[in-house]
Image (cartoon, rainbow, N blue to C red; front, side, top):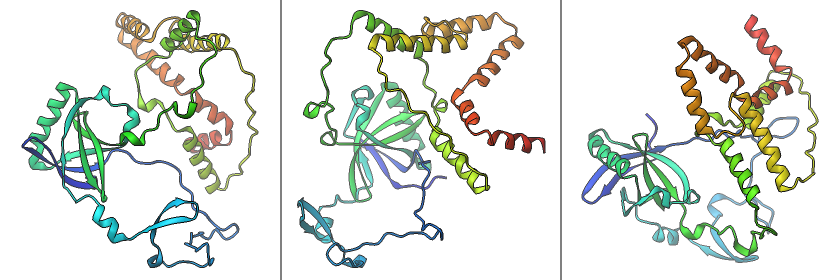
Length: 326
């Protein structure tokens, strides 16, 4: 059972649902420690005074807000405590809204809300109604001495809580003239080619399709060095600085996309939904054995970048064949 980060209840009207808050994600970033070269001893950070250059004990450290360069206002812990929101073990739903009305830029961190054993029925009631009405609940939670705005939405039969940014924390993209105006509006032909390109790349979202290739390569490098393998560095060619005009870029993109679709057995000019329907119709006319074959081919052709990564590290492939033969 996952460890609860917060325990409390959801309340809407006079209905209260006891719940536990658990993590919905985990970080897989590769983290490094700082070591002293030659000894591999850990390097620790010290709190040092800029005025004296000496280390400052933790009990001598206070919080200060910088008004301008070198000018601070010191705030005592007791003063902060008086302003902290009172601990509240309830998420009171203030509004129900449509998910489409919330721009994803407002979402911060997802969690799951898990019901207590005795609260399964009211929890299921809330999930079912929100799914039927396609609504998202907006409320507030006090967690780790901080009040956060939250959105609660049904996700695969579970309530997912997302902490949110307040409106004044979201910056406008066009502030201070950051967005340049185009010299010319896109032509009708450019718009049509862009639509064709989007159509050829349109598919159903599959999160398992996308991988953190940098993390995988970094972990493979760590494994090789831990095993004592010699690492051969390859020069990475610099990308050309040549800039194509918009029409040429669209044409090249369509040609490349069309080649990919053709490799998958789909026409370059057909949209993804139509191709999928045709593929299903063709499959229905084939015997079971013939239907299974194309699926195996698709798996072999998936993730072409992974094949390139294996070619870039030739020492890794022989090692795998040796272990299999052993």
